[in-house]
Image (cartoon, rainbow, N blue to C red; front, side):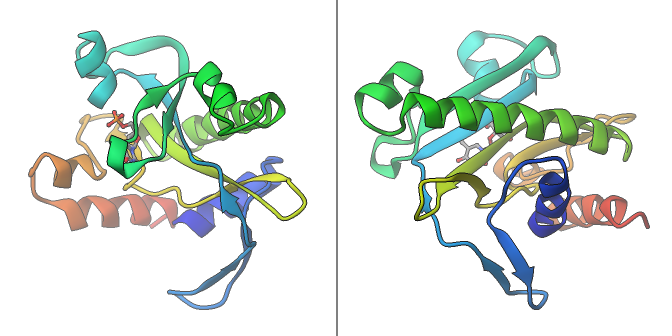
Length: 184
Ligand code: TMP
């Protein structure tokens, strides 16, 4: 699914780590050092945002939110802003600007693309890497593990929240996303 999305995003002008898919299980990717930021975009209130802000899940936001967490398991990936990232040397201003530009581009493309599959893109998390020459590219993955996908008609959850919230039907939901992606 990640390769499928990354191929389309490359065409939209977002550079990615994708080099070549060599089998169902193996992909050659560019070597990067991951920028230790979880880059989250939210279109609709859900998850930790709803909890933190007391906003009911499903409320459409007036504009997309860009959010950063510092990737650090010991600290539980704390919520940070640009100033934390700059002050701690996590990223430079130029890198943050590039990351924000690409993240909104990814969002704009994915919202439209998934709407065409009758899926609302609620929010997602992406990660970026730096190549040896310092270029910022999209890395890691885009999948129902890292996105909230709700069926536009039924509002059924078609993502990892089914697992996180012990709702059952995890595999079926992932297969449903894959089926719609493949146009089946
Ligand atoms: P959140 O509402 O729990 O902060 O999650 C926001 C989005 O980020 C959601 O689509 C799930 C994704 N996500 C990850 O991919 N990995 C993570 O570790 C977390 C916390 C969220």
